[in-house]
Image 1 (cartoon, rainbow, N blue to C red):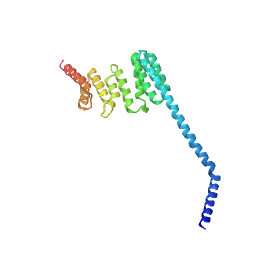
Image 2: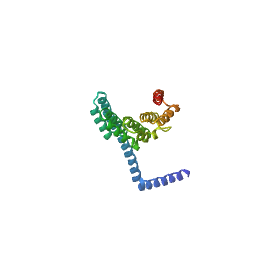
Image 3: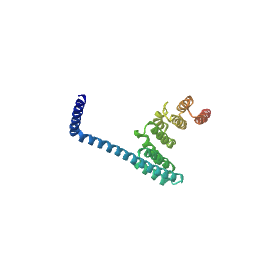
Image 4: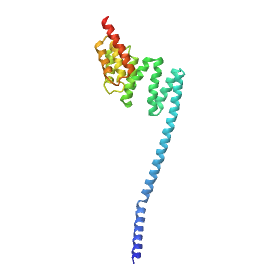
Length: 217
């Protein structure tokens, strides 16, 4: 008797499953097809991105070779093209390298290129600060101390990644423009920062000696 009831239960379950499949089977098949298609599309996208990155890497290496061969204009054009067309990571690298190539022949344009990088919020603070420091280096002899301070004072604050270089540039500019008190302020910031590089401390010591000599003359 138990076998009969078991057979009836199985038949009922079979009928229910058949009805469910008739009602929802098409949706199940469609959902499975969508999953397979999504996986295939993602794999295809990964392949495409990998191929694009490999091509951009080869072009970047070729541009570096042009730079090493002293072909500054050709290298700058190559980096500029990569910056316009390559995937995001290589675009950023290429923009910095293009600016570096301009330094060799067109420093004013290079400073403008670094300014554009410094103003690009998508790069993040570290890369923006790096670009701003490069721009300031190129303009050290042409900007007034007030102008340089406006650019670099925020970068000289504790915790900023390129604060050491920013402080040194500010100290040099202050000394050049006879702002002795301001120069001493940045010298003290360097000396009091335990993370200041040893070579920078040596340069700042020389600057301190020059300031002391100026005050005695």
